Structure formats: structure tokens, C-alpha cells
Length: 469
Image (cartoon, helix red, strand yellow):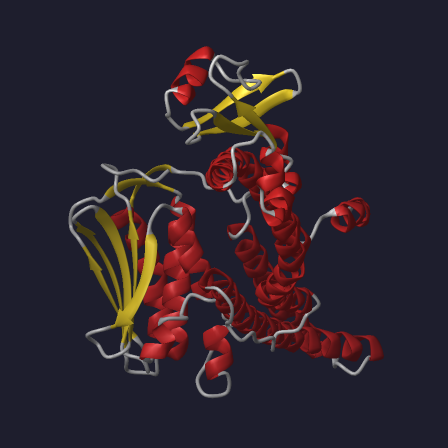
């Protein structure tokens, strides 16, 4: 099923568009929208500006034409008196000129009011409609009492405005074409840290744990590199502890297996004397029991970390549980010449919990303390009430733990690996089970230094007024 999921995922992964492509596309789309919007907004302004400019130019041509006509003789041959350059300018601008006399017909496109004002000596600057289309009109009175009217088609002005707009659009398009490769280069540079993070994650998925990334780029992308570095370190530490834990458990399992195998081979070969068969069988049984306890501890630890772990809470008395445990452990401590001191409160301490798991916590703590306590030392089991909690505490006068040990005391196998060969140690599973059982029962476990000089393990559980869930 996993292979199928990966096979289904690969086509979708190939079909995805990269950030670089999306950035370039978005940049291009935004630039294109800017070009279109700029053209739509700019055209009326450019057209209006071009029209005003054309009207002003036509007015200057009208002034020059009127001045030229006023300087020439008044014999009716007005067109021959215009300077050649002025005539060329009028032709180039597609300007038509009209000579208007009082009482004569008006120039095309002019209203009666404009014609009357012109005949009265008032200059005219207007626009009008002719059969050939809309025109700009500039009229100037002459000294002779007549007047001259120049007209230019608005289409000429619109053509020049359109030409300006096209040049403007061409400049924007050129800017877009320049911006696209620049955007591609910038996007590639910005996403380079992301590609490095992707490669690092793939390396970590492949088992590499020495992956390190240099934080670079924007702060958000640099934070990803820092997080991946932390993840790589955490994975390396976690896997190292798992390897140490498996090695220690393998060592613990191998010892009784070796003994059982050796005695079994001795029995099979007939090496064991008849009178020693019972003792050999008892030794093999004891080693088998030890193996069984190790396997059960491993299974319990695995179940404590799984969602299927179940508790059976019932109304219980923590003082009663502590009393039963004290009766057993006082005898065992006496055999090891260790003084056992129960500190149980006199009144009952009711709570709703799994009494078997609470007893398992107490047994693990005391067995751990007894293992490291030399003859003549003391072990204390305390059961008391604190505000909001029912407390189980096991103290000893053994070698204790360092401040560094306190932070990893409930992690599987860590203390076992540190002190193997230095002091008597177990499998490293007991304290891990204590921590997880305490959490499962609705409380928590803590470790510190005991007044007796050794370690102090404290488990707090919710009493009946705040029952465990």
C-alpha cells in the first residue's frame, strides 16, 4: 500500500509548478495588467493633452496666417502672399484655410454665433462638426474687416495621440520583457535556500544525520534551515539513544540466554551429575523467569507508548497499597542488610486509580533503589497527601544522580548505558515505565536529591477530589 501511495504521488509531484515558474508567471501577469490598466487610464489623458496641444499649435498657425495676410496687398490674391514655410506647415498638418467676409457664408463647422463674433473682431478658438468629420477651429479677424479661419481634422490629433499611446505601450512591453528574466533570476536566487532545505530533508529521510544548512535568504526561509538543523540533531540524539537502548537490552537478554543454553547443552551431553540435575533445572528456571520479566517489561513499555494501552481504575487507598508493598520490601531489604523505613500517613488516602499499576510503580522504584544501595544504607517509602495530589516517594542514601542524570532519568536505557560497569544497573526500563505509568494514571513523576544523600523519586497522582481520567 505504501508503494502504491508513492506511485500515486509521483505523477502529482511532477505536475506541480515550481515557485520560480509561479513567480515569473505572476510577475508577468501583474505587469501585463499594469500595461493594460495604464493604457486604459492614460489614453484619455494623452488624447486630451494632444488635443490641447494641437489646438494651441493651430492657434499659432492662425496668428501667423492672419499676420501674413495683413501685411500683404488687399487685392484678393491672399494665398499667394503666405510664406512658403507657412504654407508647408499648413499642408503638413492637414489644415484647411477659409477666407470669410462679412455677410458671406461661414466656414464649415462654425455656428452663427461664432461667425458673428468673428466678424465683430473677436478671435475664435473652438471645435465643430463638418460633413468630413469633427474639426478644430481657429478664427482670426483681419484689418480689412474680413477674417481667416483655419480648421484641422480631429482624426489627425487622435492619430498622434494613438501614436504616443502605442509608443508608451511599447515601452511598457519592453519593460515587461526585461522584467521577466530579471524576475526569474531573482526567484531562483530567493528559492535557492528552499531547494537546499528540500535536499537536506531528503538526505535526512535517507538516513543522514550530519546534515547542516547555513541559514540564508529571507527570515522565514532562514527559520526553516534552523528548524531542519535542530531536527537533524534531535534525530541523531534519539537514534543514538535507541541504539544504546537496544544494545543494553540485547546484552541483558543474552546473559540469561547464554546460561540457559549452556545448562541445556550440559544436560543433553550428560555432563551434569544426577544429583545436580535438580539444581541445574532450578537455575535454568530462574534464568527463564528473568528472561520472562525482561520480555514483559519490554511489552509493557511498548504498550505504555501506544494508544491501545488500557487502565482499570477502581476505588483504592494509596496508604493500603503502600502498606502491602512495605511488608514485602522490608523483608527483601533486610536480606540485603539495607534498612527500610516506611513513612505512611495514618489516615486513608482514597483515590480512583489502577492499584496494580501503582504497585508496579512502587516496586520498580524500590527495586531500582535497592540495586544501587550498599549494605548499611537506608531506603524510605513515603505516602502522603499534598494540596491537590496523592504522593508516593522513594528515597535512598545510595550514590544518587548528577544534575545531568536528572534530566534523562525516565528515558529508556540512558542511565543503564552511563553506569554500566560503574555501579549495579538494570535494563534501564524500570524508570521509563514509572514515568509513563504516572502520566497514564493522570499524574507525573519527578526526580531530585534525597535528604538521605541519594536519589528521591516522587510520583504525584490525583486523589478522589480530582480523579484520574
